[in-house]
Image (cartoon, rainbow, N blue to C red):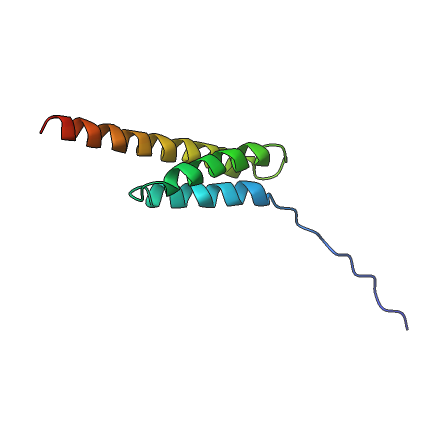
Amino acid sequence: MSEPAVQRVVIEGNGLAVAGMVLGIIGVVLNFIPLLPYLLGLLAFIFGLAGLNKPIKTGVAKAAIVLGIITIVMKILFWVFVIGGLSNM
């Protein structure tokens, strides 16, 4: 007897987009740490752009780009408010 042929289904993913989104989320959550959010936001933005090249999970790649931008903007606004608050003292 012969065994039935088994077809393997390979599910492709977009690892760079997912990594970028995870880094963006961590960057937003850990925004109070001095230098880490700049790195996380930049990496999330870069991984999101790289993830847009794959046709799979482009929404996740766009979310990574947005989260990277939000992380960096939040950190810049944090320093603007800290410096502005200290200058009024």
